[in-house]
Length: 633
Image (tube, helix red, strand yellow):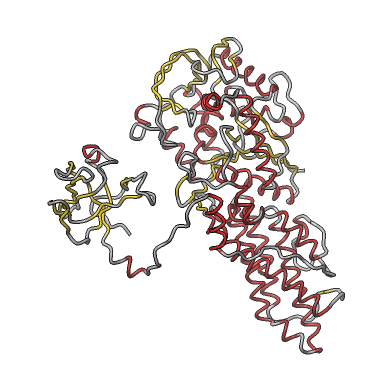
């Protein structure tokens, strides 16, 4: 039997995971369920990353031990995965003793080989990301990954030599074109990191104690990334002396499923560690995109997060699974809000899928009662639907094999939409009026039942609970992909089926959300059409001069270069910004705003900013790539 070993990145145990964190586990679960139905012997490992400075600091702030904190959060993560119907084979914790022992042995082996050596590190460290950065890596003096402030650190530590393995890694990537996916992620790693000599990697710390001690130098703890990455082999019984059955059976992993933000650690540091340990490399590292909330990366510190249990309470498990798997493209970030989940649940699940199932079963009961439904006298619309069913299976499997889950789902939705259209084309309610058309009517219903059965099998990895409900309604058993051809199920004696997905009122849902969050319901401005928007002349400008308004503490006076002219613009952002810091900023200017005099100084135009309802967290919108004078549209 074909083997398939998939891992997720292990979740960090600093706090409860939001839906952006949980998406990865749901995606992994859908892929493994698919592989299992396709005849693979699968193994799915996930878990929690439980060491590091951030956890130690969080525990100290709560007045508990780090172990108490990680026990609590690890339990919360397991609970959330269970809620989302994520079925893993093994949940590893980096505080598991067997893992800690093997990490220590691996560290010692690399030290004895000369791949690890002791030195002194001086540079910038981001506690939030557990990452080191050079001065040139920083963005406005902050972490390039999360935007948090970094700490200038100087301490004794051990380093892992990377450059001796760099050429070999590049050769591996070149000879294994599927190793880093999607393709854009591979180009990013090569162009940004592997195209120049790799600096040695700091792999131990002395400034905190919550970690695995270096066995031969216990004042050092092993750096969290070395510790965490080893889980992929220690969790399947890798041992330095003699590995267990699961390691020998499943390693190398078929895919490490990770977020795109930690690609460097998994495609550079981890492969080099494996090379240094004389172990095989994983077959593929897949860097999935993020789920954004209102098009911004979710952050607990910013308060823009949605939790899985809150979504499930409103929409149900399968509707949430469907949304995140369908709406997050293969290589692009996707967006989530309560409104969007509600609208998608209504349109795709209640209207298209649920309505098809319920009205088909209702027609079977109404027109044929307990009589078995079989293929019968055909209609002119049958062959097109049958052909589409075959194409759907082919397209679905091709997409799922490449982890393009969103495209796989959409192939099935196309079949469900076509099945609803087939009802409109064949008009069963008209056929039912003529006894002579009874065989044609039965044939129409048989075709619909087959489309529903095939779709339920294909959607089972996505919405397992819903597929079970459909199987029960059809009075069929859960089957694998050997039963996907049209006509495989010869006869149907259906049962009733509960409503799969109820239609929801978006306004009512948002009232519940607002009450839950104890926030006032935000009033939105009336809708406009494109002609209204086109009245705005928005262009990119560059601030060339900036100073305080001589007569108003809240106002700043700018001179802004718009390429073909310079404008004087007054803006009320003095409390948020030092004017000298803004010189050189590229900003968005409303060029066709009528001039106005503010406290004696003319302002011709407006700079675009963002803030909350109270004017707090005000931020001047800055443009990075566009040129001065470019249109904003």
